[in-house]
Image 1: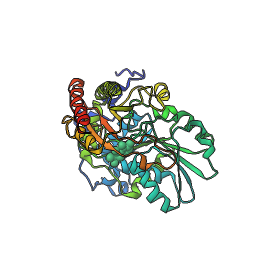
Image 2: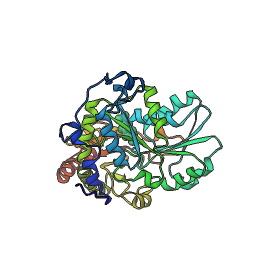
Image 3: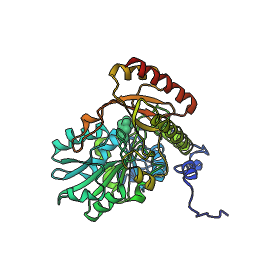
Image 4: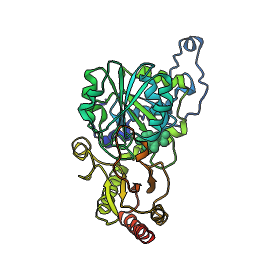
Length: 394
Ligand SMILES: Cc1ncc(COP(=O)(O)O)c(C=O)c1O
């Protein structure tokens, strides 16, 4: 006899067990990689009704590997159903196309990831969606921008370029009262440090490319939502012909199993580096939600349970050559864009030019750092050399 244990589980436990059913797969601990375009139905009746006993029907619509990942990601995000996409950018596009149509008004935070912004300006606008960017600090005052035709509201909190934290609960409450759908890019928190659905969000997008993959070797996007919005979300992915490949789903599941071990280390090292950089004479300010100087810090303290390893550093007025000397003399920090892997990264960023609803007040150079899993002491020593080079090159 099996005794059922209904006690709520910690996320540490959930991430180990969600989306696994070993006895369905010959006892294998991990759901195997199913390479399948064609699914063979057992008889004429089952193909006529598209009811294969496995639940699969066509490779593009997912196999057991895909469903294992989607189930696990739903548990991570705290939503009911997930659809996977071949990239985070694809997931953003899929979420938008699920809820928007010509004639709708769409509100987008001014601090969102560049390609998300571009999709609004270049694709949604040409499809007849009226895209309006708003100040991410608006909070509940977002109501002042609502119109009868406002259909959806998109947030990225914190913005992964400028790191302001939005008052997501206040915005979601205001939107819900008007029947406006809220979508949040929850990639920075890895789903782990911000419980989006508990804070009122209707749909999350998450670039699994980052911390879920965690090893800088997969491209993956996920959209998580309610049972109610799921049929439309899934149909949109089918219409787009979008599906994540089976190896990617497998690697993402493998990454997900250790997410709650890796994230605290990224958090700890990132925060220590941010605090140390904040004391340096070369630095104007550090953009890290856990530092009191970061816009939205109080909201971060209220709503988040941690921070990822990604943050920004506004330098004092150094020349491009000096900043390049810093970037070229920190060998433990790779020069690359896609963060969330086990390794540290550093890039120059140019934030001001993207904004339209708000003004970016810092005029001096900004760099973005991803704190990887290396030792804090080694990373700090590396940055110390880089900062010496910055000063001596200016
Ligand atoms: C916040 C955020 N959302 C979405 C994406 C897009 O993810 P992908 O690179 O998988 O397309 C990124 C990528 O950097 C990101 O930083």
